[in-house]
Length: 36
Image 1: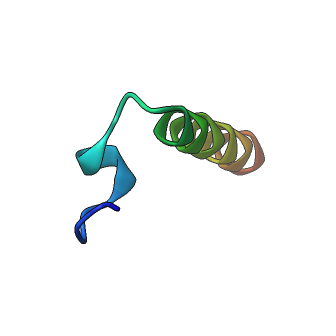
Image 2: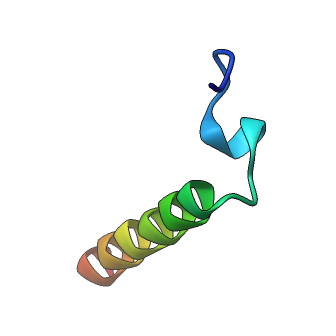
């Protein structure tokens, strides 16, 4: 249970948070490649 907190605030070092951060980096990287 996260008690209403985002995973990055509740437990930023857990596997789920690490996976989420990696996904966000990948999505941002793809957006930057398309825009310039």
